[in-house]
Length: 265
Ligand SMILES: Nc1nc2c(ncn2[C@@H]2O[C@H](COP(=O)(O)OP(=O)(O)O)[C@@H](O)[C@H]2O)c(=O)[nH]1
Ligand SMILES: [Mg+2]
Image (tube, rainbow, N blue to C red; front, side, top):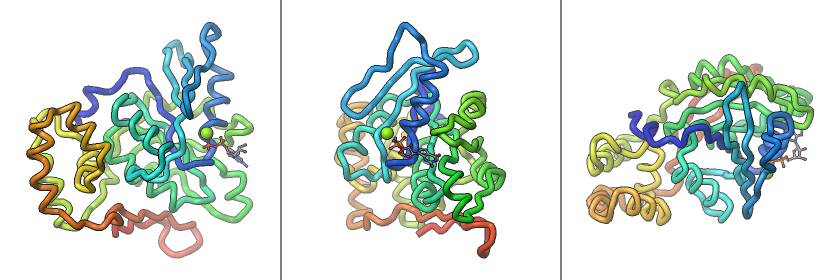
C-alpha cells in the first residue's frame, strides 16, 4: 500500500524518536552546518523547524518532541504524531538510543507502519559500546530494508552520511508486523471502509482500532463523517481490545542468543 506517499510533503524531513535520544542535538548539528543563512530556525511550543540545503536541495527539517509510542498519552507526543499524520513529511529520520534498543525498536515498528520513507540513525553508540552492547547496522538494515547510519550527535560524527542517505530513505516492506488474526481481520475490515486509492497506512488503521479520539478526528477531517461512521462498524467488532496490542520488538546483543527476533505480542 503506497497511496500515502502521494500526499507526502515534499522536502520536509521529520526527526522522530523517543525523548532524550539526541534529536535536538542532531537538529542543531544539521542546521549549523547546512542552514540557509537568511532564515534562522523558528520555534513553536516544542517544535523547531529550519530550512537546510543538502546537495543543492532545500529541505525543511523539523525537530519533533519525543514520542514513546504512536499510541500517545502525552501532549508532546500528540504534537509529534499530529505532525506525522497531518504534515506527511517526505522523510522520517528515526533517531534511536542504542542504550535502549527495546524502546527504540518498539517505536520503529510503529513508525514503519506509517508508510513514510525512513532513515534510521543509531545514536549514543559511544555509550552503548562502552557497556559492551553490540549492534549490527547491517543486520538492522537487512531486517528493515531502510538505510541505517551510525551517529555521534554531540560530536557531529555521521551527520554528513545521514544527510547523504536522504535520497535512499525507504518504506520498509520487509519488516511488517504480523498481528494476531482477529486484529488482522479488523485492519482488513477497516481498510475496506476507505476509497481504494486513499486507504490510510496500517499505523493509522491500528490507531482507529484503538479508538484513538485524535485519529478519529483526523479521519473525519480528511475523509468525511460518512467514512468515519462506516469505519465505526469494524471498530465495534474489535471492542474491548487491550491497549497492549502493539508489538514488542527486540534486538538482542550479538553475544546473547539469537541476534534479532521480532516478538509480536
Ligand atoms: N554520549 C552521548 N550523548 C548524547 C548523544 N546524543 C545526544 N546526547 C546527549 O543526550 C542529551 C539529550 O539530547 P537531546 O538532543 O536533547 O535529546 P532529544 O530529547 O531527543 O532532543 C544531551 O545532553 C545530549 O548532549 C550521543 O550520541 N552520545
Ligand atoms: Mg529535543
